[in-house]
Structure formats: structure tokens, C-alpha cells
Amino acid sequence: MNLTHRHRLRVIYAQTDRMNVVYYSRYYEFFEAARSAFLRRINVPYEQMEREGIFLPVVESHCRYFRPATYEDLLTIETRLEDEPKVKIKLSYKVYKDGVERPIAEGYTIHSFVNSDLQPVEVPEAFLACTRKYTGQVLEDEASP
Amino acid sequence: MNLTHRHRLRVIYAQTDRMNVVYYSRYYEFFEAARSAFLRRINVPYEQMEREGIFLPVVESHCRYFRPATYEDLLTIETRLEDEPKVKIKLSYKVYKDGVERPIAEGYTIHSFVNSDLQPVEVPEAFLACTRKYTGQVLEDEASP
Amino acid sequence: MNLTHRHRLRVIYAQTDRMNVVYYSRYYEFFEAARSAFLRRINVPYEQMEREGIFLPVVESHCRYFRPATYEDLLTIETRLEDEPKVKIKLSYKVYKDGVERPIAEGYTIHSFVNSDLQPVEVPEAFLACTRKYTGQVLEDEASP
Amino acid sequence: MNLTHRHRLRVIYAQTDRMNVVYYSRYYEFFEAARSAFLRRINVPYEQMEREGIFLPVVESHCRYFRPATYEDLLTIETRLEDEPKVKIKLSYKVYKDGVERPIAEGYTIHSFVNSDLQPVEVPEAFLACTRKYTGQVLEDEASP
Image 1 (cartoon, rainbow over the protein chains, first blue to last red):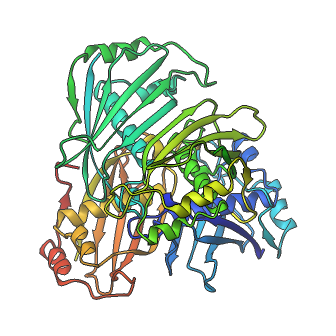
Image 2: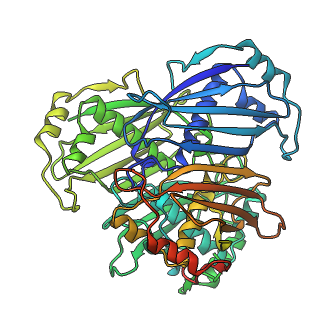
Image 3: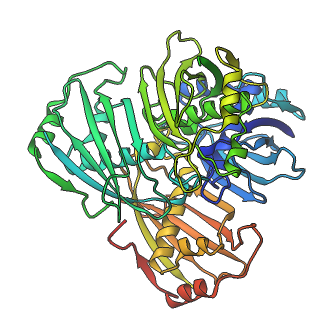
């Protein structure tokens, strides 16, 4: 689908550890903030999906860390949807730091579509329609956070 | 009621920040771990209370920080229930660090008993019975975490 | 000094708990994000202060929670500096949720100015100058996060 | 080296999200708590290593989630060191939940030995000696947390 979205965020003190770098698990919170912004941007009503009993738990997560980030750094999380989701959806992330050309980290998350009993369900048509509409595009955050 | 409980925990790397001290909000997770251990210890079936639709959200929290804690430090969180809960329950905490006599931090949390619509309810009798049974005692963690 | 700053943020999934509300300690991360944005906005070079050996650890924190917030909610954290800092600085926070008139939470943090041995030091003149320059103003976030 | 260590922990409320499961990034904090307990158990003086300027930042992390865990669950994190560390060290983790036979999650972390400029260094002899001493063993937590 080659659908890309860029999310901007600023590292806060809470996210650093005593090595003076962002603690490794915090990147997964960055990924989540980025994919939430991405889904909002392409009008996937994820909050409503949950109210209708469809959830997207993470079934696999991965990250490689190339260079550190620390307090006050401005980061861009680039989320990418390569393949149309079937039972699962895979999102890839590249983390860029202002002033550094190459990504400082990259990773992915894989999610299942499940019902409230955590049983797999088909990808909702509405979800697919949202992703198809933006195929091949590179999107940015909206003005509001 | 003068009911006291001591919970032991070890600081992990994730809880430190780049000042090489435990980040201030993490003390509130320590308080929560301590009060969960306390409620388990006096046989309050909190998990079951929630299944029956009674919740204990925090309505107020406070902490003062006297001396820092860092990675690997062994802490004792002393939870104290002074007064029999009415509509609300107040728990006080003192944080001790191994090798330091006086508390390194202290604080409190106040909780409301509410139903699943977050409306106030009376303190369940079963809850009161558990606390009364241990009035005046000083309890320790059980062996299992 | 009556100096006010408004910081906008969006609640992510990580910040919710199984009661479907923002977990109570996460508000202290909101406060930190807000005061970092505030200090940047009035040009306090906090990151540089730390490199010169002056730190601002939290010595006291407090929050009252009136109404819940949850996933996707848009919040405004209003940070207020009432009194000129002496040895300590006190910042107050009000948390507003889009669509709700009154604050859903409010709290404060008190910080000491200390050196790298955590010994109290005087408030840097540069710090005071930044706050005085904006006395009585109401500031907003800049466009970038 | 086939060196295994079992760390016990209890899920706290803070670690759950509104799906009523442990939030996915929190497993990486479990992994860290487990590997810290493991290193302490085999007498690796990690805290002292850092004071001497040797650090072990995470360069890669991975986790697969098979079944959920929630508030109050008792977990066992089984950390395994398969191969003698060279420039890097890889630790594997299996997460077991009391009452469930098969692991509910598994993952790994890879760490580099670096100096305070984040430049790679050789594995300290003292570190290797600690791991060799326990080759082939299955270790448990000590009594204190």
C-alpha cells in the first residue's frame, strides 16, 4: 500500500534513564503515539471500533536502536503500512532525530484484529476503505496534537 | 485503625531518569504496588470487587521527596491505614531505603469507592471486615511477590 | 508573577489503565511535559543549565482528580507560575479536557535549585530574567511539539 | 552456556491498559527486571561496571505475545543466556503465568558493551567469569526482591 505517515514528538525527562538516553521500552510508546496519529489521520475510527467490540492488540513488536535520543530531542516517527492487512496488520516505524540524517531507530509492530474475547475476526471493511483511500501517500500530523 | 504494612521492592533501570534518580512519578507506582500488596495481605478481594462493579480510583495524590533513590536500591514502602474508611479511604506511605534511617519520601493517596459509572457507593462491608481484623497490626509481604 | 502557559497533548493508549481512565501517575508526566514546554517557551535554557551543573529536582508533588480522561482525549495543561522563585519554585497545573468546561484535575510541583551534589543553590539570574520578561502573560505552545 | 534464571513478579494496575491486559511495552520492563535480578544472582557487579564506565545499552529488542496477562497475575520471567557474549550479549526471555502451562510471551534483547562515549568495548573478563561459573545451571531469585 506504501502508505506513510510522519508524527512529531518531543522527548520528555520521564523518558530518559540514568544512561542519559531514552529508555528502550519508551520507543514502543512512541510507536503507539505515531500509529494512533496515523489512524486518526486516515480517519480510522479506532475508538469507535473498540466500542463496537473490535480490538487491535499487539502480537509482536521489534526495535533496533542505532543512536541515542535524549531530553528535549525532537523526533519524527515515520509509520509505514506496506501491505494490505488481512487477519493481521504490520506497521513499520523509522525514528528520525532533528539534525541527524539517518534513522536513529527502527522497528515494527504486528497486530491482530480480535473481538472482545480476543478471538480473531476479519478486518473491518471500513478499516480497509480508509487505508485504500490513501494508498501511496505521505501524510503529516494535523495541527492539533 | 493504625494498620501498617511493609512492602519491599527493588528499583529497576526503567525507573531512573537522566539525573540518576528515580523519576518523581514512579513513586506513585511504588505506592500502588505497596497498597495492592497490602490489600492482598489483609485478604481484600480487590480483583473480585472490580468484577462486582466496585472500583477505587485515586481522587488525590501527594508525595514529598527528601533524598534520592537510584538503580538497584532496595526500598521498603510502609503503607498505613489510620482511619476507618467512610466514603473515601486514605492511605499514607513512607519510603525507606536500605542503609538510610529516615524515610527518603512520604506521601498519601485518597480513593473513592465508586460503581462502574464512577458514582460514589458505600464502603463494602467485606472490605471493612478485612481492615478491622488487622487493626493495630504491622504486616509484612508474603514470600511470593 | 501570574505567568501562565497552555500546553496541548493527546492521551495515548499506554496512559490508560484497565479502569479505562488515565492512570493517576501519568498526570505527573503531563505536568512535566507542560513545564518543559513552558520553560522552552520563555527561553529558559534548562538543558544548558543541567550541562552547567544546575538541576531542578521535584521535592513535592500533588494532584487532585475530578473527572477521568481516556484514550484519544485532547487535554490542555495550564501551567502557572504565581510567585517569583527563591530557593524553590512552585508551579501549579490545571488539566482541561476538550468539551468539558471545568478542569478535570489540578495539582502542583515544587522544585529545588541544586548543584550536581544535590545541594541547594541560588536561582540563576538568567532563569529569573526569563520569567520576569513574561510577567502577567498567557502563553501558548509553539507550533512544533 | 545454557544458563537460565527465573524471576518472579506480580502485575500491578499501572501496567494494564484499557483493554484490561498488560500494555505491550511493559513486557520490556519485565525483561529488564528479570535480567537485573539474573546479573545480581550470578554476582555481576553491573552497578559498579557503570561506575567504571562500562554500559550495556539495548541495541535490539523483540517480543511476541501469545496470551494476555492482567492485574494481580503472578508471572515468572525465565531469562536464558545461550551463547558466551563477545562484543554483544543476547538474552532470551520466556514469560509464564501461574496456572498456564505454556509461555504467554517470549522475546529477546541484544546489548552492546560500550564505554561512556557509547563506543564498543570488549566484554570485561570479570563479566565472563561470572557467567562461566554458572554454565548449565538453572537459578532462582534470592529471597529479597
